[in-house]
Length: 575
Image (cartoon, rainbow, N blue to C red; front, side):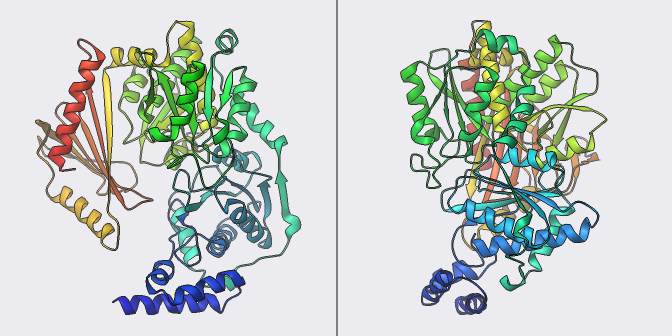
């Protein structure tokens, strides 16, 4: 088997050596030919163009992110667009983040698109993902490409493709594009170095158009004016956020935004953090240290492509604590709906959106304000799909997911950390107007709606057998689901792959009207929700645990009870 793999990898490597690639890449392949494990790792498999585009370790080979894989993927995308939308304007927007090789990959994408006759709009420097989504819509493009691997380690890069609505592709377009990309068998099939006059540069003038839309989202300018000197600390974690977040806050009227200068340097090696992920406490350490020194009110951190934001706020003991994605989404949603209600902005056709693994607290908040809420599959492209379906019929207010993504307004169709930072700052000002902090607002929400506490457990299954192990785990959960979790009976099982909801008590079945997805949900008698799904981008299986309780005596006591419950559930699931 090992010899067979090596021979397959060697044949593909030889094909690359005989094609029109650069001399440096050829030398690297020749070096790997004498290192069987390395050659197999780089060439045995092909880096999959999945439903979210490409993402992988950078290097030479068919299973790596490199200029040739990017060019082949782009040729496949161009072929699909020309075949499927023959009468649409052939325009495409391209942006990139601060990762190593991002600019190279973006320019290679632009070159291929221009050579295929597309009018190409590419930014003059790094820009966030949300601005790329905005550019697709604003410029009337048929598609868009963002070069980013989000918060992955420095060895990675990626390629995200967008449709003409500014959202990432969904079915059937995503799968049809994948087929066109797979049809490109050789680097020599790619069109390059033609029609370079088709490439147009986007600069700060276009940023101003984006800022105009961001600033329209501000709900209470008077509060900002009255509390504009709140002290904020912001870190872009060496990424694109530095281009827009501080300026957006400044233009909104906030006057005291301190930058973590060491992390404002655009560097794809992310030298000051283990991982540029605002979900991880270690990524915010430098910002929190600075905030403590200057007695700041709030800390923001955005990931490299600035579509997600993590925040740290002062708790009742004046210590900085990180809010998770569910908590941030809940505070933002509560503030936005409360302000809309006070300003009589509701017309009766408003709605919000969340993913099926995001806190049910958002459902409770929506119910209070009597507005519709949609549940969608995991992935912001499904939020974008609902917005598109309801365009001209209903008014989208906001939407979020537990993994730190949030979107206010619909001028962008992907999560947007720039506008989220602005509204979070506005929430801080609103809290201060009541002599409160954002933490106090969160406690108010918990007291009104109940304490919702969530946990995420990710189990990594690496190697050749990893995916098979994950498949078997899902198969076992389907054939032998748990009967109880933390001493509470399972009453509902939702199987999104089979698209059915089963009432365990009376054995009735109802249809789930969402696209097929390999997700299971177990709902207990006490309304605990456990969701199980394989990751779409990593060799992981994820368990989302959602619990809730009424705060009877105090927050800490109730929080400890729910923490113990979550540990009980983990034990029952053997995770």
